[in-house]
Image 1 (tube, rainbow, N blue to C red):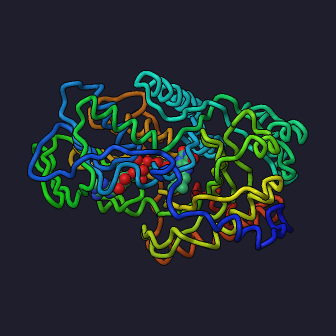
Image 2 (cartoon, rainbow, N blue to C red):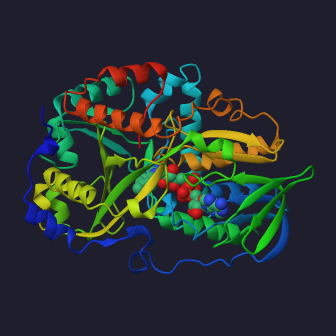
Image 3 (tube, rainbow, N blue to C red):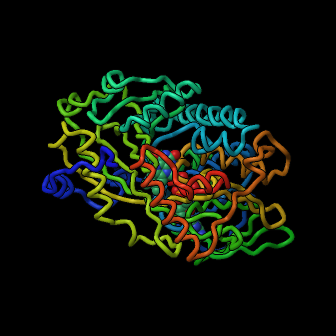
Length: 472
Ligand SMILES: Cc1cc2nc3c(=O)[nH]c(=O)nc-3n(C[C@H](O)[C@H](O)[C@H](O)COP(=O)(O)OP(=O)(O)OC[C@H]3O[C@@H](n4cnc5c(N)ncnc54)[C@H](O)[C@@H]3O)c2cc1C
Protein backbone atom coordinates (compact mmCIF):
# COMPACT_ATOMS: atom_id res chain seq x y z
CA UNK A 1 0.00 0.00 0.00
CA UNK A 2 1.23 3.47 -0.84
CA UNK A 3 1.07 6.49 1.43
CA UNK A 4 0.54 10.05 0.33
CA UNK A 5 4.28 10.62 0.61
CA UNK A 6 5.05 7.97 -2.02
CA UNK A 7 3.70 10.26 -4.74
CA UNK A 8 6.30 11.30 -7.28
CA UNK A 9 7.72 14.82 -7.19
CA UNK A 10 9.55 16.45 -10.08
CA UNK A 11 13.25 15.82 -9.35
CA UNK A 12 14.30 19.09 -10.97
CA UNK A 13 12.04 21.01 -8.55
CA UNK A 14 13.72 19.26 -5.61
CA UNK A 15 17.22 19.95 -6.93
CA UNK A 16 16.39 23.58 -7.61
CA UNK A 17 14.74 24.10 -4.23
CA UNK A 18 17.67 22.56 -2.34
CA UNK A 19 20.41 24.28 -4.33
CA UNK A 20 20.65 27.40 -2.11
CA UNK A 21 20.50 25.41 1.17
CA UNK A 22 23.68 25.84 3.20
CA UNK A 23 24.67 23.16 5.70
CA UNK A 24 24.16 24.16 9.32
CA UNK A 25 21.38 25.04 11.72
CA UNK A 26 19.38 28.05 10.61
CA UNK A 27 18.92 29.00 14.28
CA UNK A 28 22.69 29.33 14.80
CA UNK A 29 23.44 31.12 11.52
CA UNK A 30 24.91 34.50 12.55
CA UNK A 31 23.34 36.08 9.45
CA UNK A 32 19.93 35.05 10.77
CA UNK A 33 20.28 35.24 14.57
CA UNK A 34 22.90 37.97 14.91
CA UNK A 35 25.84 38.04 17.33
CA UNK A 36 26.05 35.51 20.14
CA UNK A 37 27.68 35.62 23.57
CA UNK A 38 31.20 34.23 24.12
CA UNK A 39 32.54 32.72 27.32
CA UNK A 40 36.25 32.02 27.98
CA UNK A 41 37.68 28.52 28.39
CA UNK A 42 38.68 27.50 31.89
CA UNK A 43 42.38 27.49 32.66
CA UNK A 44 43.91 26.59 35.99
CA UNK A 45 42.33 25.19 39.12
CA UNK A 46 39.05 26.31 40.61
CA UNK A 47 36.38 25.06 42.98
CA UNK A 48 32.65 25.38 43.32
CA UNK A 49 29.57 24.13 45.12
CA UNK A 50 27.95 22.88 41.93
CA UNK A 51 29.55 22.01 38.59
CA UNK A 52 27.25 21.56 35.62
CA UNK A 53 28.76 19.70 32.67
CA UNK A 54 27.04 20.54 29.36
CA UNK A 55 25.85 23.84 27.93
CA UNK A 56 22.52 22.93 26.35
CA UNK A 57 19.07 23.52 27.87
CA UNK A 58 19.48 20.92 30.60
CA UNK A 59 22.75 22.36 31.84
CA UNK A 60 21.62 25.98 31.59
CA UNK A 61 18.27 25.47 33.34
CA UNK A 62 20.05 23.46 36.04
CA UNK A 63 22.61 26.21 36.59
CA UNK A 64 19.97 28.95 36.60
CA UNK A 65 17.67 27.20 39.04
CA UNK A 66 20.62 26.22 41.25
CA UNK A 67 21.67 29.88 41.42
CA UNK A 68 18.08 30.87 42.24
CA UNK A 69 17.65 28.19 44.91
CA UNK A 70 20.92 29.15 46.63
CA UNK A 71 21.87 32.71 45.67
CA UNK A 72 25.25 32.59 47.44
CA UNK A 73 26.37 29.27 45.95
CA UNK A 74 29.32 29.04 43.55
CA UNK A 75 27.98 27.51 40.33
CA UNK A 76 30.22 26.71 37.36
CA UNK A 77 29.04 25.45 33.95
CA UNK A 78 31.47 23.97 31.42
CA UNK A 79 30.72 23.26 27.78
CA UNK A 80 32.99 21.20 25.52
CA UNK A 81 32.29 23.29 22.38
CA UNK A 82 30.01 26.34 22.18
CA UNK A 83 26.78 26.76 24.17
CA UNK A 84 23.87 25.32 22.21
CA UNK A 85 25.93 23.99 19.30
CA UNK A 86 24.30 20.55 19.72
CA UNK A 87 20.62 19.55 20.01
CA UNK A 88 19.65 22.72 21.87
CA UNK A 89 20.65 24.89 18.90
CA UNK A 90 19.35 22.58 16.18
CA UNK A 91 15.88 21.47 17.26
CA UNK A 92 12.44 22.27 15.93
CA UNK A 93 11.66 24.55 18.85
CA UNK A 94 8.45 22.71 19.76
CA UNK A 95 8.00 23.21 23.49
CA UNK A 96 5.62 20.44 24.45
CA UNK A 97 4.26 19.96 27.95
CA UNK A 98 4.50 16.18 27.81
CA UNK A 99 7.21 14.67 30.00
CA UNK A 100 6.43 11.19 28.69
CA UNK A 101 6.72 11.59 24.92
CA UNK A 102 2.97 11.73 24.55
CA UNK A 103 -0.10 10.24 26.15
CA UNK A 104 -0.02 6.71 24.77
CA UNK A 105 3.57 6.16 25.92
CA UNK A 106 2.99 7.77 29.31
CA UNK A 107 -0.30 6.01 30.07
CA UNK A 108 1.00 2.59 29.09
CA UNK A 109 4.17 2.87 31.21
CA UNK A 110 2.93 4.75 34.25
CA UNK A 111 -0.86 4.28 34.38
CA UNK A 112 -1.02 5.08 38.08
CA UNK A 113 0.92 8.33 38.01
CA UNK A 114 0.09 9.52 34.51
CA UNK A 115 -2.28 12.28 35.69
CA UNK A 116 0.45 13.51 38.04
CA UNK A 117 2.99 13.49 35.20
CA UNK A 118 0.61 15.50 33.03
CA UNK A 119 0.04 18.01 35.84
CA UNK A 120 3.79 18.38 36.41
CA UNK A 121 4.37 18.71 32.65
CA UNK A 122 1.86 21.55 32.36
CA UNK A 123 3.28 23.23 35.49
CA UNK A 124 6.74 22.98 33.90
CA UNK A 125 5.56 24.54 30.62
CA UNK A 126 3.76 27.34 32.48
CA UNK A 127 6.83 27.77 34.70
CA UNK A 128 9.05 28.06 31.65
CA UNK A 129 6.77 30.72 30.20
CA UNK A 130 6.86 32.56 33.53
CA UNK A 131 10.68 32.33 33.74
CA UNK A 132 10.99 33.65 30.19
CA UNK A 133 8.69 36.57 31.00
CA UNK A 134 10.21 37.42 34.38
CA UNK A 135 13.77 37.42 32.97
CA UNK A 136 12.62 39.33 29.86
CA UNK A 137 14.14 36.68 27.60
CA UNK A 138 13.85 37.56 23.92
CA UNK A 139 13.18 34.08 22.50
CA UNK A 140 10.22 34.40 20.09
CA UNK A 141 7.95 32.49 22.48
CA UNK A 142 4.55 31.78 20.87
CA UNK A 143 1.99 29.73 22.84
CA UNK A 144 0.06 28.80 19.70
CA UNK A 145 -0.75 25.14 20.43
CA UNK A 146 -0.20 21.95 18.50
CA UNK A 147 -2.06 20.82 15.39
CA UNK A 148 -1.69 17.10 14.69
CA UNK A 149 -2.80 16.18 11.20
CA UNK A 150 -3.90 12.93 9.59
CA UNK A 151 -2.69 12.29 6.06
CA UNK A 152 -4.26 8.81 5.80
CA UNK A 153 -7.81 7.68 6.67
CA UNK A 154 -6.72 5.35 9.50
CA UNK A 155 -4.88 8.25 11.15
CA UNK A 156 -8.10 10.27 11.16
CA UNK A 157 -9.62 7.52 13.33
CA UNK A 158 -6.64 7.73 15.71
CA UNK A 159 -7.18 11.48 16.02
CA UNK A 160 -10.88 10.97 16.73
CA UNK A 161 -9.96 8.55 19.53
CA UNK A 162 -7.47 11.07 20.92
CA UNK A 163 -10.13 13.79 20.88
CA UNK A 164 -12.51 11.40 22.70
CA UNK A 165 -9.75 10.90 25.28
CA UNK A 166 -9.57 14.65 25.92
CA UNK A 167 -6.34 15.35 24.04
CA UNK A 168 -7.74 18.19 21.91
CA UNK A 169 -10.47 19.24 19.51
CA UNK A 170 -11.17 17.05 16.50
CA UNK A 171 -11.15 18.91 13.18
CA UNK A 172 -12.67 17.35 10.09
CA UNK A 173 -11.14 17.73 6.64
CA UNK A 174 -12.59 21.14 5.92
CA UNK A 175 -11.88 22.47 9.40
CA UNK A 176 -8.23 21.40 9.42
CA UNK A 177 -7.63 22.78 5.91
CA UNK A 178 -9.16 26.07 7.03
CA UNK A 179 -6.33 26.25 9.57
CA UNK A 180 -3.46 25.10 7.37
CA UNK A 181 -4.24 24.41 3.76
CA UNK A 182 -2.70 21.16 2.59
CA UNK A 183 -4.45 18.86 0.12
CA UNK A 184 -2.96 15.92 2.05
CA UNK A 185 -4.92 16.54 5.24
CA UNK A 186 -7.79 14.20 6.09
CA UNK A 187 -8.44 15.47 9.63
CA UNK A 188 -6.74 17.23 12.52
CA UNK A 189 -6.53 17.46 16.28
CA UNK A 190 -5.89 20.82 17.87
CA UNK A 191 -4.50 21.11 21.40
CA UNK A 192 -4.48 24.85 22.12
CA UNK A 193 -2.55 25.02 25.37
CA UNK A 194 -0.02 22.20 25.65
CA UNK A 195 2.60 23.43 23.19
CA UNK A 196 4.51 26.60 22.39
CA UNK A 197 7.20 27.37 19.84
CA UNK A 198 10.46 29.10 20.63
CA UNK A 199 13.65 30.23 18.85
CA UNK A 200 15.91 27.40 20.04
CA UNK A 201 19.25 29.19 19.89
CA UNK A 202 17.94 32.43 21.36
CA UNK A 203 16.66 30.38 24.30
CA UNK A 204 20.22 29.11 24.85
CA UNK A 205 21.77 32.57 24.58
CA UNK A 206 19.18 34.17 26.85
CA UNK A 207 19.49 31.42 29.46
CA UNK A 208 23.25 32.00 29.41
CA UNK A 209 22.76 35.74 29.84
CA UNK A 210 20.50 35.26 32.86
CA UNK A 211 22.82 32.60 34.34
CA UNK A 212 25.78 34.99 34.06
CA UNK A 213 23.72 37.77 35.64
CA UNK A 214 23.00 35.42 38.57
CA UNK A 215 26.73 34.80 39.04
CA UNK A 216 27.11 31.46 37.24
CA UNK A 217 30.63 31.15 35.82
CA UNK A 218 30.39 29.79 32.27
CA UNK A 219 33.30 28.32 30.31
CA UNK A 220 33.01 27.29 26.67
CA UNK A 221 35.54 25.06 24.89
CA UNK A 222 36.10 23.28 28.19
CA UNK A 223 35.46 19.54 27.98
CA UNK A 224 35.32 17.45 31.14
CA UNK A 225 37.70 14.58 30.52
CA UNK A 226 37.47 12.60 33.74
CA UNK A 227 35.66 12.48 37.06
CA UNK A 228 37.38 11.42 40.23
CA UNK A 229 35.17 10.81 43.24
CA UNK A 230 36.62 11.60 46.66
CA UNK A 231 35.11 11.60 50.15
CA UNK A 232 34.62 15.37 50.18
CA UNK A 233 33.73 16.07 46.59
CA UNK A 234 34.38 15.37 42.94
CA UNK A 235 37.47 16.38 40.98
CA UNK A 236 36.86 17.06 37.30
CA UNK A 237 39.76 17.32 34.89
CA UNK A 238 39.66 19.42 31.72
CA UNK A 239 42.35 20.06 29.09
CA UNK A 240 43.77 23.09 30.88
CA UNK A 241 42.39 22.94 34.37
CA UNK A 242 40.75 21.12 37.25
CA UNK A 243 37.57 21.79 39.15
CA UNK A 244 36.96 20.63 42.70
CA UNK A 245 33.18 20.49 43.04
CA UNK A 246 30.95 19.59 45.95
CA UNK A 247 28.27 18.35 43.56
CA UNK A 248 28.10 17.68 39.82
CA UNK A 249 25.25 17.50 37.30
CA UNK A 250 26.00 15.71 34.04
CA UNK A 251 23.86 17.29 31.33
CA UNK A 252 25.73 15.78 28.39
CA UNK A 253 22.73 14.33 26.49
CA UNK A 254 23.72 12.09 23.56
CA UNK A 255 27.48 12.43 24.04
CA UNK A 256 29.38 9.55 25.71
CA UNK A 257 28.58 9.72 29.41
CA UNK A 258 31.44 10.36 31.80
CA UNK A 259 29.95 7.45 33.74
CA UNK A 260 30.62 4.32 31.73
CA UNK A 261 27.75 2.43 33.34
CA UNK A 262 25.31 4.90 31.82
CA UNK A 263 26.40 4.42 28.23
CA UNK A 264 24.23 1.46 27.24
CA UNK A 265 20.99 3.24 28.10
CA UNK A 266 20.82 5.41 25.00
CA UNK A 267 21.66 5.34 21.31
CA UNK A 268 22.13 8.30 18.92
CA UNK A 269 19.41 8.49 16.26
CA UNK A 270 19.88 11.11 13.54
CA UNK A 271 17.08 13.52 12.69
CA UNK A 272 17.17 15.75 9.55
CA UNK A 273 15.78 19.25 9.07
CA UNK A 274 15.26 21.84 6.32
CA UNK A 275 14.34 25.50 6.60
CA UNK A 276 12.94 27.72 3.87
CA UNK A 277 13.57 31.33 3.04
CA UNK A 278 11.09 33.72 4.75
CA UNK A 279 7.72 33.37 3.02
CA UNK A 280 6.24 36.49 1.48
CA UNK A 281 2.76 37.51 2.63
CA UNK A 282 1.38 36.23 -0.68
CA UNK A 283 3.07 32.82 -0.24
CA UNK A 284 1.82 32.53 3.34
CA UNK A 285 -1.70 33.42 2.25
CA UNK A 286 -1.75 30.40 -0.05
CA UNK A 287 -1.48 28.05 2.92
CA UNK A 288 -3.31 30.02 5.62
CA UNK A 289 -1.62 29.13 8.91
CA UNK A 290 -2.83 32.32 10.55
CA UNK A 291 -2.88 30.52 13.93
CA UNK A 292 0.88 29.79 13.63
CA UNK A 293 0.43 26.42 15.36
CA UNK A 294 3.18 23.83 15.57
CA UNK A 295 2.19 21.03 13.16
CA UNK A 296 3.02 17.33 13.16
CA UNK A 297 1.62 14.49 11.08
CA UNK A 298 0.60 11.18 12.58
CA UNK A 299 2.49 8.27 11.01
CA UNK A 300 5.23 6.39 12.85
CA UNK A 301 7.61 8.21 10.55
CA UNK A 302 6.32 11.73 11.06
CA UNK A 303 7.16 15.24 9.95
CA UNK A 304 7.12 18.26 12.24
CA UNK A 305 6.89 21.81 10.94
CA UNK A 306 6.39 25.33 12.16
CA UNK A 307 6.86 28.97 11.26
CA UNK A 308 9.74 31.05 12.59
CA UNK A 309 9.17 34.64 13.68
CA UNK A 310 10.26 35.80 10.20
CA UNK A 311 7.93 33.25 8.53
CA UNK A 312 10.40 30.63 7.39
CA UNK A 313 9.04 27.10 7.49
CA UNK A 314 11.14 24.66 9.48
CA UNK A 315 10.45 21.20 8.10
CA UNK A 316 11.97 18.17 9.82
CA UNK A 317 11.60 14.55 10.79
CA UNK A 318 10.52 11.41 8.92
CA UNK A 319 13.90 9.72 8.52
CA UNK A 320 15.20 8.68 11.93
CA UNK A 321 18.48 7.03 11.13
CA UNK A 322 20.58 4.85 13.38
CA UNK A 323 24.10 4.15 12.18
CA UNK A 324 25.60 0.85 13.25
CA UNK A 325 28.26 1.35 15.94
CA UNK A 326 26.41 3.81 18.19
CA UNK A 327 28.74 6.68 17.37
CA UNK A 328 28.02 10.41 17.43
CA UNK A 329 29.75 11.46 14.23
CA UNK A 330 29.34 14.70 12.23
CA UNK A 331 29.84 12.70 9.02
CA UNK A 332 26.30 11.31 9.46
CA UNK A 333 24.76 14.76 9.31
CA UNK A 334 24.95 15.81 5.66
CA UNK A 335 22.78 13.07 4.13
CA UNK A 336 21.51 14.05 0.67
CA UNK A 337 18.94 11.20 0.52
CA UNK A 338 17.21 12.42 3.66
CA UNK A 339 17.19 16.06 2.52
CA UNK A 340 15.78 15.12 -0.92
CA UNK A 341 13.07 13.04 0.75
CA UNK A 342 12.20 15.89 3.10
CA UNK A 343 12.02 18.37 0.21
CA UNK A 344 9.77 16.01 -1.79
CA UNK A 345 7.44 15.60 1.19
CA UNK A 346 7.34 19.37 1.66
CA UNK A 347 6.11 19.90 -1.91
CA UNK A 348 3.59 17.05 -1.59
CA UNK A 349 2.21 18.75 1.52
CA UNK A 350 2.30 22.27 0.11
CA UNK A 351 2.17 22.12 -3.72
CA UNK A 352 1.17 25.81 -3.60
CA UNK A 353 4.72 26.63 -2.46
CA UNK A 354 6.62 25.35 -5.51
CA UNK A 355 8.32 28.74 -5.76
CA UNK A 356 9.77 28.54 -2.22
CA UNK A 357 13.45 27.65 -1.76
CA UNK A 358 15.35 26.12 1.15
CA UNK A 359 18.12 28.14 2.75
CA UNK A 360 19.41 25.69 5.40
CA UNK A 361 19.79 21.95 5.86
CA UNK A 362 21.07 20.29 9.01
CA UNK A 363 20.80 17.30 11.31
CA UNK A 364 21.43 16.26 14.88
CA UNK A 365 21.67 13.11 16.97
CA UNK A 366 18.78 12.41 19.30
CA UNK A 367 19.45 10.74 22.64
CA UNK A 368 17.07 7.79 22.40
CA UNK A 369 16.32 5.31 25.16
CA UNK A 370 13.98 2.34 25.25
CA UNK A 371 11.18 4.19 27.01
CA UNK A 372 11.28 7.39 24.88
CA UNK A 373 11.61 9.89 27.71
CA UNK A 374 14.22 11.05 30.20
CA UNK A 375 15.80 8.83 32.86
CA UNK A 376 17.85 9.96 35.85
CA UNK A 377 20.41 8.57 38.22
CA UNK A 378 22.80 9.34 41.05
CA UNK A 379 26.44 8.28 41.31
CA UNK A 380 29.51 9.08 43.41
CA UNK A 381 27.73 8.49 46.74
CA UNK A 382 24.97 10.93 45.83
CA UNK A 383 27.27 13.73 44.64
CA UNK A 384 26.74 13.28 40.90
CA UNK A 385 23.33 13.46 39.23
CA UNK A 386 22.69 12.76 35.56
CA UNK A 387 19.86 12.73 33.08
CA UNK A 388 19.67 11.29 29.58
CA UNK A 389 17.21 9.94 27.02
CA UNK A 390 14.93 12.82 26.03
CA UNK A 391 14.30 10.99 22.73
CA UNK A 392 13.42 13.98 20.60
CA UNK A 393 11.15 15.77 23.06
CA UNK A 394 13.49 17.60 25.37
CA UNK A 395 12.97 21.33 24.93
CA UNK A 396 10.52 21.67 27.82
CA UNK A 397 11.47 18.43 29.58
CA UNK A 398 15.08 19.66 30.00
CA UNK A 399 13.88 22.30 32.46
CA UNK A 400 12.00 19.71 34.50
CA UNK A 401 15.01 17.38 34.26
CA UNK A 402 17.31 20.02 35.72
CA UNK A 403 14.97 20.49 38.67
CA UNK A 404 14.95 16.73 39.26
CA UNK A 405 18.77 16.65 39.23
CA UNK A 406 18.91 19.44 41.82
CA UNK A 407 16.29 17.69 43.98
CA UNK A 408 18.25 14.44 43.79
CA UNK A 409 21.47 16.16 44.86
CA UNK A 410 19.70 17.89 47.75
CA UNK A 411 18.74 14.41 48.92
CA UNK A 412 15.30 15.24 50.25
CA UNK A 413 12.20 13.70 48.70
CA UNK A 414 10.09 15.98 46.50
CA UNK A 415 7.02 15.28 44.38
CA UNK A 416 9.43 14.96 41.45
CA UNK A 417 11.88 12.52 43.03
CA UNK A 418 9.05 10.33 44.31
CA UNK A 419 7.82 9.64 40.78
CA UNK A 420 8.23 6.08 39.57
CA UNK A 421 9.37 7.60 36.27
CA UNK A 422 12.27 9.24 38.12
CA UNK A 423 13.11 6.31 40.40
CA UNK A 424 13.11 3.62 37.69
CA UNK A 425 15.54 3.25 34.81
CA UNK A 426 14.63 1.95 31.35
CA UNK A 427 16.04 -1.29 30.01
CA UNK A 428 19.42 -0.71 28.36
CA UNK A 429 19.98 -1.42 24.67
CA UNK A 430 22.02 -4.56 24.01
CA UNK A 431 25.59 -4.14 22.76
CA UNK A 432 26.38 -4.08 19.03
CA UNK A 433 25.71 -5.74 16.67
CA UNK A 434 22.48 -6.78 18.41
CA UNK A 435 21.32 -3.20 19.01
CA UNK A 436 21.87 -2.31 15.35
CA UNK A 437 20.08 -5.38 14.02
CA UNK A 438 17.13 -4.86 16.39
CA UNK A 439 16.82 -1.16 15.58
CA UNK A 440 16.95 -1.70 11.80
CA UNK A 441 14.28 -4.42 12.06
CA UNK A 442 12.11 -2.09 14.14
CA UNK A 443 12.54 0.80 11.70
CA UNK A 444 11.61 -1.46 8.79
CA UNK A 445 8.53 -2.67 10.69
CA UNK A 446 7.43 0.89 11.50
CA UNK A 447 7.69 1.83 7.82
CA UNK A 448 5.65 -1.27 6.92
CA UNK A 449 3.00 -0.31 9.48
CA UNK A 450 2.76 3.17 7.94
CA UNK A 451 2.18 1.50 4.57
CA UNK A 452 -0.36 -0.93 5.99
CA UNK A 453 -3.02 1.32 7.55
CA UNK A 454 -1.05 1.46 10.81
CA UNK A 455 -1.23 -2.30 11.45
CA UNK A 456 1.71 -3.42 13.57
CA UNK A 457 3.52 -6.66 12.80
CA UNK A 458 4.54 -9.34 15.28
CA UNK A 459 7.87 -7.68 16.11
CA UNK A 460 6.23 -4.35 16.97
CA UNK A 461 3.45 -6.03 18.96
CA UNK A 462 6.04 -8.00 20.93
CA UNK A 463 8.11 -4.88 21.62
CA UNK A 464 4.92 -3.06 22.68
CA UNK A 465 4.16 -5.85 25.15
CA UNK A 466 7.71 -5.75 26.53
CA UNK A 467 7.61 -1.96 26.82
CA UNK A 468 10.58 -1.69 24.46
CA UNK A 469 10.97 0.15 21.24
CA UNK A 470 12.63 2.66 19.03
CA UNK A 471 11.69 6.27 18.32
CA UNK A 472 13.23 9.63 17.50
C1 LIG B 1 17.16 17.83 14.89
C2 LIG B 1 16.52 17.82 16.25
C3 LIG B 1 15.22 18.31 16.40
C4 LIG B 1 14.62 18.31 17.66
N1 LIG B 1 13.38 18.89 17.80
C5 LIG B 1 12.83 18.98 19.04
C6 LIG B 1 11.62 19.69 19.25
O1 LIG B 1 11.09 20.34 18.34
N2 LIG B 1 11.08 19.69 20.49
C7 LIG B 1 11.67 19.04 21.53
O2 LIG B 1 11.12 19.06 22.63
N3 LIG B 1 12.86 18.42 21.38
C8 LIG B 1 13.46 18.40 20.17
N4 LIG B 1 14.68 17.81 20.03
C9 LIG B 1 15.37 17.31 21.23
C10 LIG B 1 15.95 18.45 22.05
O3 LIG B 1 16.64 19.35 21.21
C11 LIG B 1 16.90 17.89 23.11
O4 LIG B 1 16.23 16.91 23.87
C12 LIG B 1 17.42 18.96 24.06
O5 LIG B 1 17.99 20.03 23.34
C13 LIG B 1 18.44 18.34 24.99
O6 LIG B 1 19.13 19.36 25.67
P1 LIG B 1 20.45 18.99 26.46
O7 LIG B 1 20.94 20.20 27.11
O8 LIG B 1 20.17 17.82 27.34
O9 LIG B 1 21.44 18.46 25.35
P2 LIG B 1 22.41 19.22 24.30
O10 LIG B 1 21.79 20.42 23.74
O11 LIG B 1 22.86 18.16 23.36
O12 LIG B 1 23.61 19.68 25.19
C14 LIG B 1 24.53 18.79 25.75
C15 LIG B 1 25.86 19.52 25.79
O13 LIG B 1 26.78 18.79 26.59
C16 LIG B 1 28.07 19.06 26.06
N5 LIG B 1 28.99 18.02 26.52
C17 LIG B 1 28.93 16.69 26.26
N6 LIG B 1 29.96 16.05 26.88
C18 LIG B 1 30.67 17.01 27.53
C19 LIG B 1 31.84 16.98 28.33
N7 LIG B 1 32.49 15.83 28.59
N8 LIG B 1 32.31 18.15 28.83
C20 LIG B 1 31.66 19.32 28.59
N9 LIG B 1 30.55 19.40 27.83
C21 LIG B 1 30.07 18.26 27.31
C22 LIG B 1 27.85 19.02 24.56
O14 LIG B 1 28.90 19.67 23.86
C23 LIG B 1 26.49 19.69 24.42
O15 LIG B 1 26.60 21.07 24.12
C24 LIG B 1 15.31 17.78 18.78
C25 LIG B 1 16.61 17.31 18.64
C26 LIG B 1 17.21 17.33 17.38
C27 LIG B 1 18.62 16.82 17.24
